[in-house]
Amino acid sequence: MNSSSLAIDIQGGLSDAWSSVATFVPKLAGFLVILVVGWLVAKVVAKLVSRILHRIGFDRMVERGGINRMLENSNYDAVDILAKLAYYAILLITLQLGFGAFGPNPVSDMLNGIVAWLPRAFVAIVIVCIAGAIASAVKDLVSNMLSGLEYGRMLGRVAAVFIWGIGIIAALNQIGVGTSVTMPILITVLATIGGVLVVGFGGGLVRPMQQRWDRWLNTIEGEMPELKGHAQAYQRGREDAARQREAARQRSTSGQQMPPGKWADQPVGASGYGAQPGYGGAQPSSGGSEQRGYGGQSGQGGGQSGYGGERMDYSGGQYGGGDASGWHRQDPPMGGRGRYSGPAGGDTGWDDPSVDR
Image 1 (cartoon, rainbow, N blue to C red):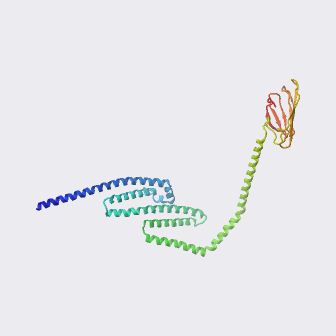
Image 2 (cartoon, helix red, strand yellow; image 1 turned 90 degrees about the horizontal axis):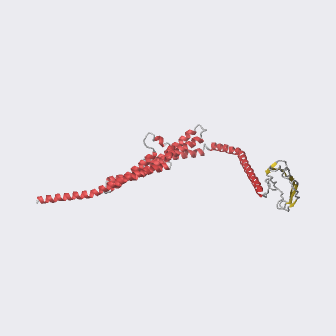
Image 3 (tube, rainbow, N blue to C red; image 1 turned 30 degrees about the vertical axis):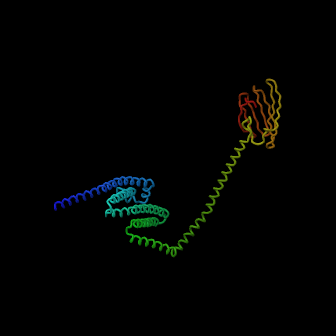
């Protein structure tokens, strides 16, 4: 009887152990698979975070804020820290999911709290970096604006420290560290600054600020005539340029309206083309002279112009002509080039006399 009960107990223990192993092994396999997949995802996410932060210029912003100088003795910069933070955050989430495969346990509860805190840490780091960049920019701006004053640099440093303080307090509040201490400090600092401004502008700073405004207004009033002179000179320059463009356009238009003649240079004005021409002349024998006259009345401008001249044989003669506008032409012997002279006696162009006029 005792031996049979002992055999039953051994068989029951082996069955329970086998059931526990059979139940645990799939959970362990799932845990390992989750760890491997999560590790790969964490590496990919870390690289993506690093590339995105470099692409948006986060490293340059941090460098302006002076945070890189704080991290120069370490092996990481701000971008690397954020990438590592993202990497370990994914690993913690992976562990949370992996331990969740075994059911409720204390490790999963602890990991849940850490994972819930990680986004706050990420946001806190970003707040500190942005506050550092703003503090550096404000410091440079205030120092440059008040460079002529003895206390200009000091005011720039004070403004930078104030912004740094606000950023650090906001970051601590974000991660939930010292909230009961940081919030009263922040409220006290802001109230102190507000009180100083109220008392200053409401009391002792009223008259100095009034005098300063008077000086600024007097300076602006004294510079107004000079500014008006610059504006008037600029307007006159624009008007002169417009007149020059209009004159050039008119000259171009007048040049395009000239009728195409046989001679290259014609005076702009009254023309004899398109009127009532008359041709007359006598044709001598060889060696004689030829007289040809051109005359007409123009209907365009009401003017009159006529071309008349005497042409000798090409064997060596010259012919000249004149018109009412004062143009004159001389042709050299055959093979030469004709010259046109204007009213002032200047050359206006050349033409080949071998072409029939």
